[in-house]
Image 1 (cartoon, rainbow, N blue to C red):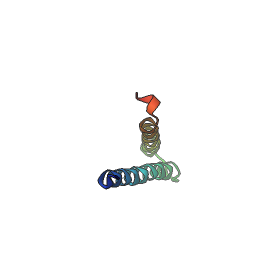
Image 2 (cartoon, rainbow, N blue to C red; image 1 turned 90 degrees about the vertical axis):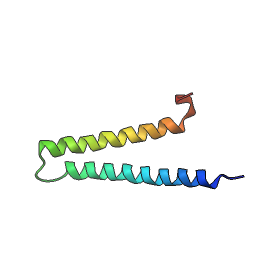
Image 3 (cartoon, rainbow, N blue to C red; image 1 turned 180 degrees about the horizontal axis):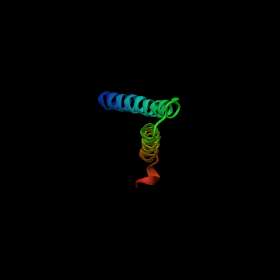
Image 4 (cartoon, rainbow, N blue to C red; image 1 turned 180 degrees about the vertical axis):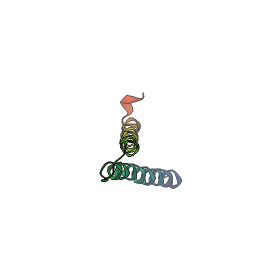
Length: 69
């Protein structure tokens, strides 16, 4: 029997995390490609990329069972 509530939770978490990763990446691109780029914008852009990479690596960690068994 399918546990539909667990399926719904997984679907919602996947949708929200994908939206967050895309938003972080696009914000990082936006901060690094403006004409009047300051040091603060550069640091914030790279911080967005680092957070995006951490999210992707955490997702890989959750998917691959050999990494956490």
